[in-house]
Image (cartoon, rainbow, N blue to C red; front, side, top):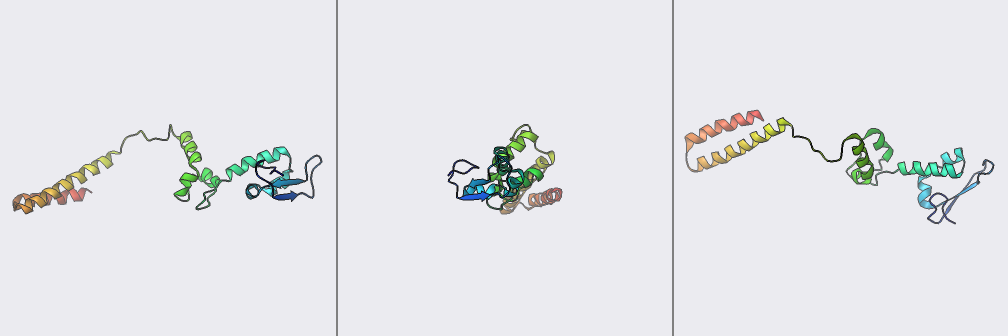
Length: 159
């Protein structure tokens, strides 16, 4: 017998309901995979009709979780926080969908902050000055090395 939930796998679990509504079946056949995801409490409360099974299928898709940290998809959708690096691959479709809803796309096309550019220029000047200082000391040009040393101290104070 096939699973009533997915209709694909062989059913190995049978759920019997003592109280069932008229016209509704009193047993449900489930495969092992679907038995892990179906909420039997929900089905018992609502009955085992076709409509309740369809609704439960939609809920079970949202019960997806990360295979590594077991963070449920529901938590990510509510808070926007992921539990581990593996969540990015587990919830990739949902993350991309959420980004597209909140932004114009999933690629950044903006500008770089000006403080970052300033800091980068200072670091480049500092590395150039350190290189020139080593060269001046090696060539025994101590007066120029002293000026470079003062420049290096001033550049380091900006960082």
